[in-house]
Image 1 (cartoon, rainbow, N blue to C red):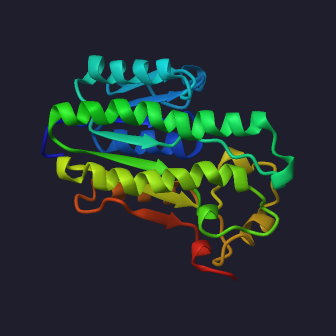
Image 2: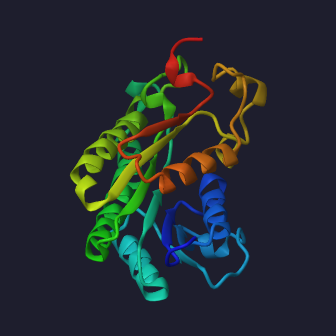
Length: 242
């Protein structure tokens, strides 16, 4: 990097896509503040003076405040944010309970809201722009029969709408807001699902690696003329029936 060392926040950073993002941006010379409920005990990362770990529930406003204060106290700026923390609950629509809705909303919506508000406020103070990348789902655009997730997609679809709205709201301030919409990814979430079945859920008949999603996040974080974009990394699943 030719300019000052940048600082990124990653939520849901202890495993899977989140851990991949943390390591990718450390390799690119960023300072990184990563958070999840028990990230300090995860053993996922090597000790580094450019990495800070914060335990906490991202749906709690106090966690967002602690993460931002850590970023500013340790590294002095916030230049990028990856809203990776999220949960997925698949049920028939009529079987969803109030506790399902509240859990989905707490992590997927409130977790996004609290940390994004604080990050944007700091980016505005810095007057050097910034990047936010949200993680949604290809199921927002292309539901799959049998993968019933209407209530979960209320939250992920809401993130896509917010991505476009925020891209316009903060374009003049140089703050870019984009999203990555993965399909099936080889993460611990699918460890108990048959791999041959998972391969049928996208046209290319493959399961994405974590690195496939990380590459998309890196691109959107550093693509200076891209904002309001939803980048599908799903083997073509969003394009239609197969």
